[in-house]
Image (cartoon, rainbow, N blue to C red; front, top):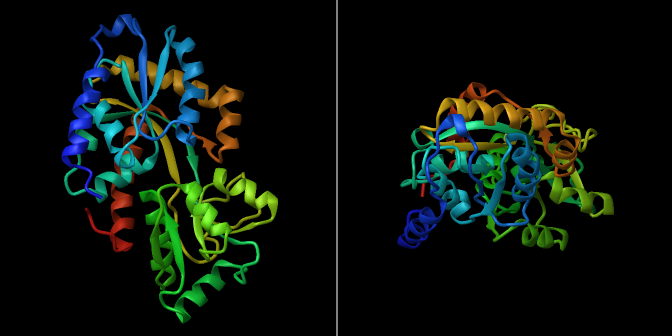
Length: 324
């Protein structure tokens, strides 16, 4: 995965022209539409939540918000557009943790500096990763998987389609003391199809991807990667409860270009935090997609992002993954 290729650079240059609005004073904010960039494909979970939140954020600010999906390079392209936009609050990033905690730790030549070029505005919701097996699998617990993996080196394989899934699977295997082969996929749908078709013995998935097959009786969940059990599946124990301290849950967050005036950051944070805390429409949508609504102040969000960069760097190192 070379995320700094000429193709990406050329695409980014073109996107920057369209994504850089005219600056406006903080006391008149907002005086023009705000562009909320989602660095993943339209119709995905992050995009759906961004649009749901933006429907309420626009009126709360007394303005309008245009949500644009700018996918590419595991979120690096869209994130870089915002990182290089004017720091005036009119270009924001609505993204998942893979872009701000994993990409900087997995990329030799990133398109921007996460800490120098972007500033956290607010957090939206936290989601778990789940360890799943087919319903007819002989594995009844995480301990069964670990025992089999140790006794049969290299026979277990799991699919991945983004860096968070890859690191979660590798961390689980490393802490369990066994190895799993990595099978790359273009997306979650394709990976789940092969998994349910019996071509993969285990997978790391999210609540949105697990809900339908679990309800249909074709998938069983063995554990979650959260510190506490997820409300979406309260009967499923955490990996930590089962002796493996794997915590690789993901936080959706909003960012602005570094240098954005603090009064704008404060106002955005106040409105976003209020929406996350009180809007039943947003909270229901988050929980439908397996996220727990989680609001932080702007300084708390900044501290969280900085600490997560360090935590994920350690997880990636322990998982034996190298920068590419």
